[in-house]
Amino acid sequence: MATKTRSLTACIVVLVALFAWNSPAYSTEKATQASKFIEGLAGEAVNALTAPDVSAEQREQLFKTLLNKNFAVTTIGQWVLGRYWAKATAEQRREYLRLFEEMIVVTYLNRFKRYSGESLVVTRALVDDQSGDAMVFSQIKRPSGSAPLDIAWRVRPKGDSFKIVDVSVEGVSMSQTQRTEFSSVIRRNGGQIEGLLAEMRQKVNG
Image (cartoon, rainbow, N blue to C red; front, side):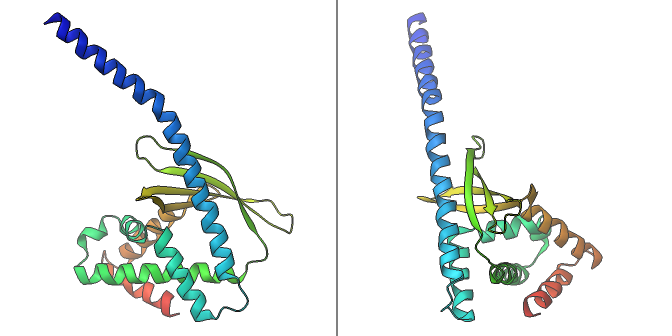
């Protein structure tokens, strides 16, 4: 019995040692892949959305394609709505997610219109061993010589690639900011989600 116990213990020790040995390499590889994912997205977005021969309609469609390919839009949208997601009807959820996507498109297309040669440089990447998410830290370099803008991307493995689940600008989470704003709108409307949907419709159709 003692021999079997010692053998089992030895096996566990070996497994733990192997796991501990392989984890740093795995984390480093994932961090590298996440960095390349963000670099590739930045280049693709600039090339597609700033080309002079692209119409406004084509630009919008290109952005929607990039958005749904690279961002976990549904996951982000549900998290941003918070506890109100459970209170929403199926119809309200569908409209909310549609409007949420449209708001992102409108907001970022307007920002790309002001593009003036900025470039994104990845500075480092870390992997959260508990969640499996990677944090990719980057800077937006400005040709004007102004101070660079710090952007951090939280990306989550999805199949053989990644999906972005949050973006932080100068340390401020965009998802958290949006969540706070949406919650405030709903509270102002007596806790009714319809009040938020009405405001979102106005912003999208603006």
